[in-house]
Length: 113
Length: 115
Image (cartoon, rainbow over all chains, first blue to last red; front, side, top):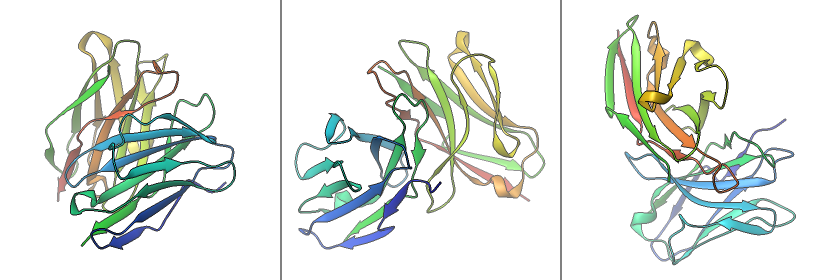
């Protein structure tokens, strides 16, 4: 059973470009969480999704950031018009319905130049 | 609301010495508590977790943690440090209040092991 997959592992974007980060949860997991880790900081919750639904996006910046988890395919975290402050590691985690433990992917490290 | 405080952003121990990483939490309901380890440029790996039951929890790589409700603590220990333990460790809490496991992480403790 493959773990949580994230791609790309490393992403470089120029200021103003769009970044798309993908997360494929573990098989059988229907819940996805996105976290951001800024340099020298812990992980901060961004958004929690179930299939086709955003349940909690209280940690998402109000502008430029969006997330989806379609019925088919991976969850996508999209950052429009990236700025240098968006440079961070973005981690995805998944859990089964009712699960008490989240399983983390290896992360995508976004660098904005 | 829930929160986690990790005392000491950097801890250094000698190889073979006791490892003690401190974590205090705040939660409005009985919490679930976790310790994760992160090696450089990698994701998070679960070391151990407390949900209910026995308050002394054993994890991987010889680590263990004790849930102390009266002290709102969940400190991580290992009797004898190994060079491979050098990494960053995160304590985390979730309370299920929202109907799902929204996890709050501490700011992390970087463990250095000195030969």
